[in-house]
Length: 198
Image (cartoon, rainbow, N blue to C red):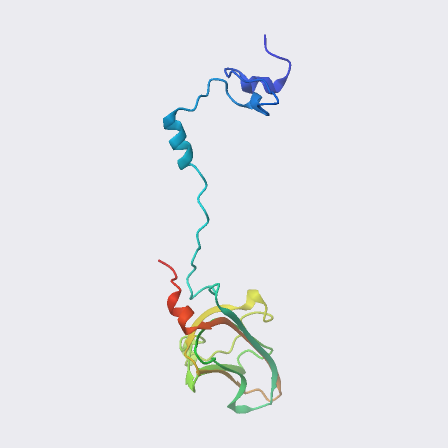
């Protein structure tokens, strides 16, 4: 006859030990379970291993020993600024390796304000922008400079390199723009000693 306790049906076929002070919770342990020498060695092999450090690719994530870089600016560009105006500049610290991983741009006049990123005076991100217009960067990456507006843009800077954003405004009225670049910097030695990826 089946017990009136509905949970007992899950115990059918098992011999159980009664709970006792010397064996708390023993009623959950099958009585016919015996640990042999072979089982003991197997039991030892099932120990949870200690955690190991996970190294993520440094072109996507900042390493644990790095310092974050997050530079931004909001500026008003005068009307008919034909000569590109320097609105944001960052010099990579000495004795470090610096990675810029993402950037965000915002403008109220797409197609009339143009963003030109350079390192030491040379254009970088040469294939970002509109291909049919010499890769001019003229569109915002989002409605603001938040995390969701950042786009991937890996860039390596040597010590002393100057990373600069220039802006042109071809509109007949002043226009507001905003720029943000994020990444990390770490000492040369730490950079060389840290292994990333597979």
